[in-house]
Image (cartoon, rainbow, N blue to C red):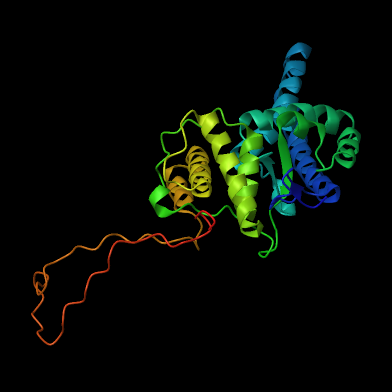
Length: 307
């Protein structure tokens, strides 16, 4: 199965990683981690030669919990799902809805990984990945995560379309904590594929998703806002919050602005009386004043209701 499909037959642009690439990434990570663990163990053995047996055993247990277990959890948390092996293989760990993972996801994956990767030498993880339709191991099932391929051809990569400029930042006070991940996944899938749906089917689907999302947030659907535009604006707000939490305010502003090829909002121009000139500029009577453009009107697009 190369793509994720919902019950509405909408395909998501995330592509689950195959077992060979995941196994290669795990091998790279284990080689690096165990090399660091051996070096630290040798240093501790030399440095703690004068200690008693109980102290040496305690340091050995602490170093095992800190390096082979704690370091992968910390790396996945700080890099948002990109360990050294996954970075080399073009993989990344994400949530089921496509968002970045947090500490609790990395902690569950790392804790269960001790059993299915270290103690069983990867046998449990291989069997679980072969049985799972998305290639997930046991740790992914309990953490609600998925390993996907980041290096996707440009013609296959699909991003969530940005909302209309007049809706950006309008839902900054909305409470999104009660929205489940499966609803986020359905909204994301609809937005990435709504151009391929029939107009009537897409409109009814957007209405259903918008009402479900509004019911979860506790705020009714704004009057006069198309459902698809409302969904895009709320998803954009959530992406901005995730970026702000992960990378700071600069990334949040970039996420709220949408992709690079999205609509550009120009600052308003200052109107001057006809014939007036800026201070310090000589008058040129040979040139007529350029008429100022009117207010920007959002173009008719896929966010408009069907005829």
